[in-house]
Image (cartoon, rainbow, N blue to C red; front, side):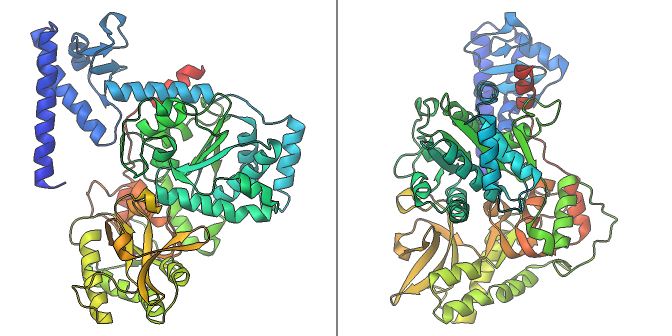
Length: 564
């Protein structure tokens, strides 16, 4: 955050505190509580901006807040009111809108957590046997299919390589056979993730069921949740949602990928829009980065598993990694990051698939970038088409924990871009050249492009064009058609969530930085399929492993109470 942004945020907080104090006094609140209301309200405001849903307050502060007409104390019926700006519950203070969203989401998920088999048990079992007949399906994957057929809500958490997408494809085929009129919607929090899920599922279907009629019943492409819920207009601009998110969606089966990105508000609107007989499948990795906005919904609901869990019959964990058996170093590091068992005093040797590089410096990253992207640039110079270039781009990527700073994505992109232009003899004033990799920085739904989509510049019919992945291969756009883009030689870990590359070079945050966290490093590590290079030593990763992000919320507790 820049100094200007910090000053603006401070000004907003001060005005909010003053508003609360004025409101408190206007409604006849006692003078002793006025300052506490203003200060606590700012803490709740600040907490929501940092990803928390609420903030914990001590007993003395809670007593003062309970005496204010601005605060609804849900533990004291006499201190409740419909128009109060803040809500106090079990020693936690909420902005009213955050409390309402969490409460509504808990009730919505509890209402969905019921048995609703698509057919009798014998028919479901036969269909499961049929879609799993080609082998290679473990007990957890089979349990996922069974849960999706038998219940209205299914929560699926698994790391990369655990077969989430393949198993979802089997579930879709089984559900469609058991219910021929089934209407299916495929969505994700981002357009890139939605398109990737749709493309992966469609690629799996011919192997599971060659009947073209099944393909015709599926949506042509995935969509963002905002568009699915009517929270974006045709141009991708936000609009007042009205009651759109409260009306049932025109779908009987809604599958949402990358559900760890769901913030509280979006999750609440999604659950509210599930029809009275429809079912919802939330799929993601509970250990990855949470949403940018407030809430860690997927991690909270994934925790409600097991004999004592409120959603124990709805939650399925996929734990067996099939993809990284050829990369044991990466797999072991990912597991220890996820579990927080990596010790700072340990020696983690470099292996064929895992390497630590010291000393850390921008020059080293730039040198590795020039070597790593050599295949893309050589292919572009040889006239490779968009399909070949996109495949080359998927083989190598540099990921940075930070966007700013000398080792952040912005500075590294500028330096690498300058060196690549120099190598190719491209004038620095020329924006576009074959081999340039870019990331979309602004949604353009009319073009089917969304923030985070990554493409590469190629030559098509003698003209420069930018190729993006598509169901049938690639989509080509003239550079002038594109919305705002930035170079993609280096991506942030946040923007790379949901993507994978053969080789990943990872630039961690420095020790003590707020982004040196278990979830961020785990997400970065699991983007690599075959080779991971870390700029730093194991002590830096061990420190991050010991710092899990814990977003404050009572969602799990609410659901548990409702299901008791």
